[in-house]
Length: 84
Image (cartoon, rainbow, N blue to C red; front, side, top):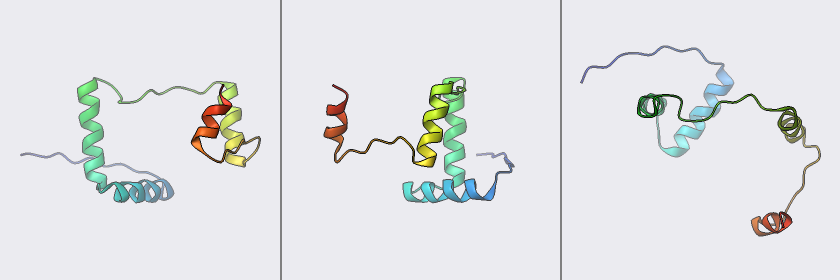
């Protein structure tokens, strides 16, 4: 089977975090990239939705990063019960 090379630059922190996760999944970076490219070709596009978050979502993400306005639950059931 012939192969082609892909060269990419990424910040070291993101690379390290991603490779730690891939290692836990038992995958190499090469396998992950191959899977990503395969999904692009199978779906004829990105295999996930890409959107710009609205203002409410931006605020929620920022609050989450800063640990503000968070609700904590003792269990998943307690969380689900709070939705009722």
